[in-house]
Image (cartoon, rainbow, N blue to C red; front, side):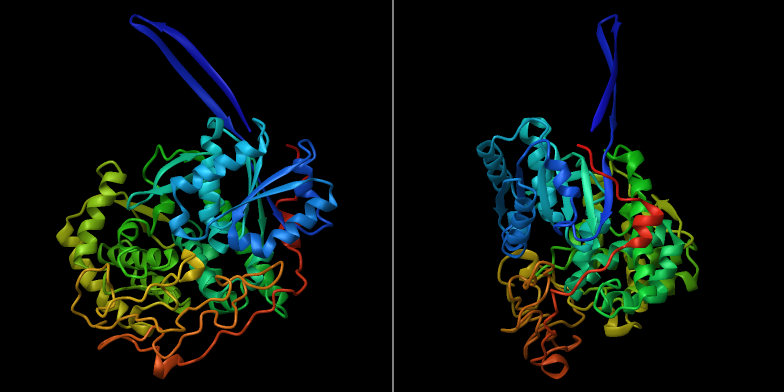
Length: 512
């Protein structure tokens, strides 16, 4: 919701207008947003007597019946628009099809569209709402860890254009965001890691308490999906809920004064300086969490080199990434990536580097003085540090698969990185995925209401799965031949988040 105040005054040559818009939007922690006993979502639509829901095809297959049953229970007819899956669907064509559904549905000016899914779905559908009549309301239900921690905080919505990510977009806030962490219970481990990187990002630069909790419980948080798996230690669940709450709160405090990114020195841009260029260089591309982890680790080494971080702080950051199975280096993170990535980000940041660097750990400073040669010198230093860590700095399940793209994972060329640039440090046959490499069931999100469970072949590495070349770290025939990730139980009873609901932010009755 928003309120507008403005003044208009005469000038010698015309008029001067000053307008100020007050934005109000809300977050609610819930447990089981589509449980029949939870009437919060239904309250949002009582006034309208119907619901238009946008989600992707996989989510429709998994959650369509549950959503249908929920709104049937409250006598609210529901209409679904199921968009395609994956990055290729983040397009203007997909947006226009959502707009077609809004027209067919006959959406009323302030009637909210319900958007359920990960960051890609909320980006595209949110932008469609921003475009439709220039301002259509929507309600957001993120379903991934990145969606819950990061994408749900921002009001940015966008689609890709040409070869550029998020080049067309807007700033458009949902009227409500419902944060339901029960989705994490059966989220594939690779996607838990993906979101874990975003929590490291915000805690490294703004919240030392959360960083300390991540450092203390890292492996247990990932293994138990933040205390959501059956039999998890209640104390771990409490810690997980608290650190997620704190991370979101810090993100909101940093984002809220700068919702339209008028100020370009942004703490939450830590890890997002060279990663936008580097993320898409390998084929298949890196997962976003791994791309920003490499960027963050390298930036931490730059901080060490400039005396902004101590050796102990630098080691803590890199060690946490490594323990989490996140990447801290990559053969294509090289001099060319630094040069081209710097050139690209300077355009985005209005000619200044504005590099967010933890200094000290839990706080942030910005670096603007640099030469490309100095940055490349630091890169050589960083690679020496990274080589000392597990897997030589490589991450686990670092590359996108069908669960990310909605398409079969491409087999890289004989040189390992078809879209990359040459690197002489091994990986001759790097990351060559075999027949079973990352072959998911229903895109890694099969089974039940609280899906996100891998099918029989979910993330199973075959003989050639992630088999690296001459100097690579072989995880194929010798390391993981034929092994399969266990099928996760997607039907266990979910608990509550009483620590958050009762003590932090009470879940309120929703008035739209």
